[in-house]
Image (cartoon, rainbow, N blue to C red; front, side):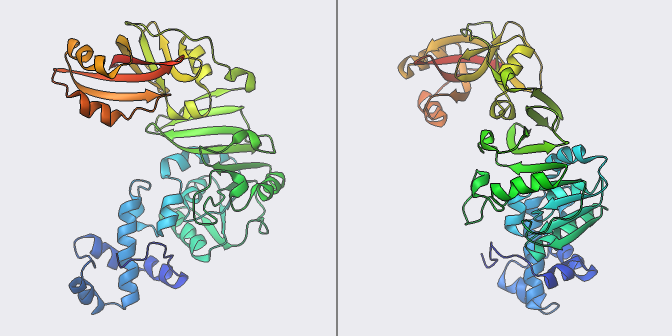
Length: 394
């Protein structure tokens, strides 16, 4: 708790952490000699200045947290907010592929360099951030991957490096709380629009919850999921536009797209019946509103005009949806649920919901199941009534 969560390392600390002595201190702390108690801190202060002990131990903790995002986290330099806001390595690598062929790339609002290090695999990068320490961290972190980036301190509303294309990650916490809309980011939507006019192609990192329809410039909207979680939205402009909407699932790298707004229309719905296969689209497909596109590709139909679950006759393997074989259905009634599940010998239950306010954990706790069968209970509002769907995972 003695580590200040909002602390950003100074340029002097970054230079030391990147040095041989700084790296050695971090490695030793991480290998079993932490600075996490008064006694341990006192021992370390016999060898290093107090500020360096604090700086090194802080990096050890941040690197542990960053391992879920970066394969080389143990050599990178971070601050806590920078780690939280950075694009993880898998997503950044996917995005950076569209920049192949560029001679020079501007990474604006680069932060600690999550996108910088991936972009630098394709071309030299100018990494611009209003924070000097952040731009220095971006330059260092790209170097950890053996790539070239030049950290530049600057306000991206005024600092526009010469480049073939640009990536921009507006700060969504300009007043401390997370904002979803570009209008409330820094730079704001007006400034972003000017940057779109400045470069031949721009990738704008957005919140998956942003209102994409309000963008004042033409853009392809890509929703990206990683292991089933919708991690990021990107607005691609200019030379990067290849579709109207796109959903990409990682780590598979597969994508599905719509060429224009008309393709987003859903086909007619179909009732859920035992023996059918129910498909739960990936989060990126749902957020990109590509459920209709997926339904037509798989010869499937939505269970309701407002519920993003699909049904079809035959099993199918697709990276864009989880599949379940429907065993039985029941008009949802919690009093009837327990004997119904007992009749199917269900003892272990996973619950998924759509369009209802039920809390799955509360339902499972009250059911007290004792059977031998493992199943999935999907509860959705079909029309004006909730329906319980008993199923097995494919």
